[in-house]
Image (cartoon, rainbow, N blue to C red):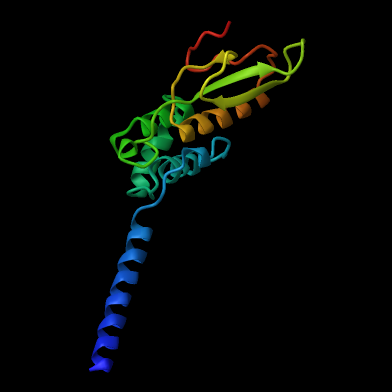
Length: 167
């Protein structure tokens, strides 16, 4: 009798572990902050959006190629495609998509010459704000984008992204 109880417990434990393993492999965790803004490959960028924003792998290569075509042909920027992903129904179902949108991104200058610019994510600040509010992870992803764009610009004034006026 004791042998039968142990066998049933072992089988039940094995089934539970298998189910947990399957669910972990099936559903990734989205983290838009892991988005690879500066990868040279548009296909790599799109794949990073699927993994970072949606928490899963792309359906197939054709979907990745279709999104990458928009970058290569300059129909859409990486930032615009990021917003398509971040505002998609898939993303809104993720843990990050369900978070409260209470964070904003702001920048401030480090010295009187308005250079360099440092970017921050906060819940409340009186410095120069960009539009928001965002979830924390989306705000972190956009902060990363701003920092990379700043490195690639010769202007010492702020960056005007998303057609947001900066005063």
